[in-house]
Image (cartoon, rainbow over all chains, first blue to last red; front, side):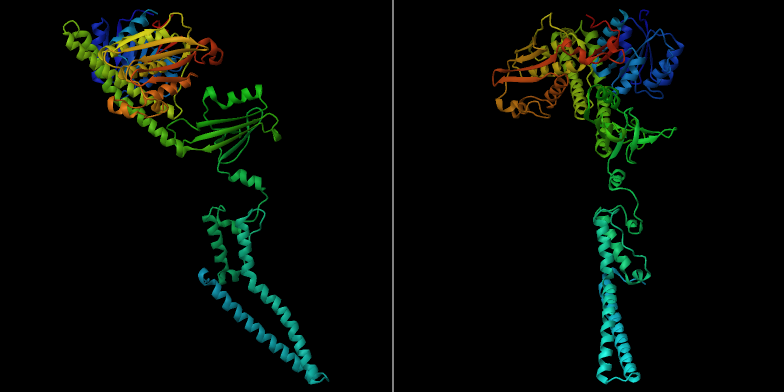
Length: 127
Length: 513
């Protein structure tokens, strides 16, 4: 898997989106911030991203639907991207299992700071 | 028009007296007429005629007496039949015959109907129509099977449903076979239990709680408690009997509460993410320019925001635990690696509260079987408490050592300590000692959830304390090799997934050993 350079952040909360945007941009990544689920899905399929940060509770299209559209039913529309689900909503076990088969990670936003997220992204590249 | 139930008795008495007088008059007339005719046509004396007349009257009176008594007691018979019918087995006892028209006229039918209505009101029968229903050929056992307030299902040795009552959560598939409609958990389901029973047992009983018949959000979703009884030599090809008790009314509100708590937690976590995140950005961006005392302000803000986040996790975990939703995924873990990951946060917490936090974790500790995010919460709660109840510049020592099949982890402080009287209730929900309520803030959930998590791992938690000298909390986690065979392999190929305190990452190198 390639080095992570380009990141798509699909996040409807402006404060949180800009927080990740600022932190990741300062760390040298090229970040696109999109606040709608539908547009996020479009961007993910039309532009090549190395990493997609995906919120779950999104307007128009939920993160789980985006995940299903990108990697559902055996297909993979983003084979060169890693997908990291970032949410504050505690999923039940079934949804977590469903996400495990499609996403590359799952994190509770309130439990990680931007610096921790950077650490995680850097360590993902080492693999 | 029918007579009212309240007037039935008077009405029937008057009716009977009138009938009795009429019959008597008729009999006396007939007997008199017969006596006169005998005297007139036959050559007998008046005394003989009188005697014959009296004999005839006596005969008629006997016959009339039987008829009158039968007629007068008829309502008693019908009513006692009705009472017997509702008060004992309705199949074995025949219902009274209330078809004759006069019963409708004289109000007896209404009387019988009233008996049935009272019986229904008292829950004795299923409906007043029983009064006119023909008795069927169903046995009492059949009646119990059909009318029991719980589902009863019989399974054969292949696990196929061969009999089920109407209330049981079943449906017919297109091949006209009955199928169970119960969503057991895969790891602890009916099939797994049956497999285990067939391999190892002759008889067994098992109880499952909160088994739903459909996925959340479906209309008419029901939630059951299920009792399974397995008998290898079950008669009539019935190997397993399942009893299902519909507990939707009890469990559904819990689930709504759970939804509320999950939603509330989500709403609270949004602003906390922003506060923690922006503080983190400010801390990083301003670090070179901040004076030392300003840095202390930022640190304190960071620690407080982090604590808030911890409280929310505690509330969510308690809510899950109380509803049997707390699930732990045990993996082979290195205690040292987990602590190293938490170290910066712990160090900052200790520093801002002026405590000295030291760790004595041997490098060569065996790996433990633990759910890393839950274990992190236990450590976090105990260290937070130790910091809270320490004195200024006090020391908090975290140590670990092997103890039998377990690794024992202790968190010691040299703070205010506790009297023996409070220690018994320390791990109960919302417990806060009188003194701690006065001196230190808290929710009373931390130690409760610690105990729940530790015990769910198969470990135990304890406390020793001397008032004025400090406390030491200890808990044990199983050594991985002692439980590895019980844990088995994860069905989802999860060995590549690294669980973190705050989520999970696939193929992550952070905690690789």
